Image (cartoon, rainbow, N blue to C red; front, top):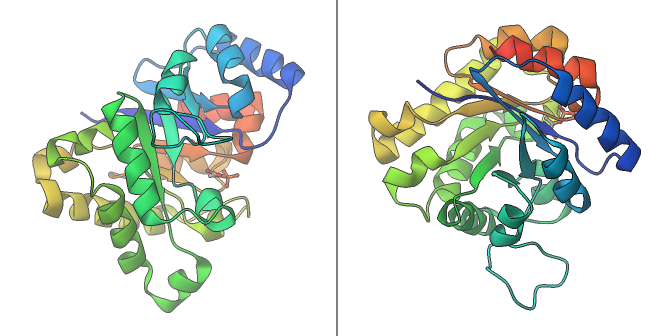
Amino acid sequence: MRDLIVAGNWKMNGNRQFIDEMMSGLNKAIFSESVKVVVCPPSVYLLDVSQKAKTVKVGAQNMYFEDGGAFTGELSPSMLIDVGCSYVVVGHSERREIFAEEDVLVAKKVSAAVRHCLTPILCVGESLEHRNSGQFFDVIARQVKIGLSLLNAENFADVVVAYEPIWAIGTGQTASPAQAQEVHELIRKVITELAGENVSERISILYGGSVNAASAQELFSQPDIDGGLVGGASLKIDEFIAICSAAA
Ligand code: PEP
């Protein structure tokens, strides 16, 4: 009923040679029809990746919410569509922490993406401090509520949510399947309260944080985990393909 999605976030990695190799590997891979595979390269390579991609979808790692104008260094939703994107990662914890993006800005980006028919992958997740203090449910519920706050409830299903505990990103310390499932269930419950079960049952919620070929299957088999947002392991072609297969 829900889309199964595996998205690779290449972050600020790669060059033209890497892209040639990755895209030729991805184009040769046979993915199950039940999984949507997305790659999110650095923005300078989006057009090249889109032109090379045969089966995978392309996503940007960030965008601005305005349609155009004096916003030096930024990319608009229509520019992303123009270069072949169908997804955009919004509110990644690295954007929130390093570039001081706050929930309200994230909400504007989510709403602009939906308005332009780009699927936003709205990232939420707690710090280690919030995990240890037991406040993580409140933090995540707030991020979800504000992130979706500028949408009409009927558009919530146009959004993909990614639960990415900050303490698991790039650390090799994956959340256990039970820890991840607990939070995914909470996120779905928050969305049910806002928009009803009909909507919340249609939203794909991805897990991200040190997913690799060994951990993917058990994580993705949890009832509320609908695939993954994968960082480091998405840079290794064989491992990324194995992770995509684990979602099928
Ligand atoms: C990410 O940055 O979205 C991510 C999940 O990274 P990693 O898989 O490397 O932890």
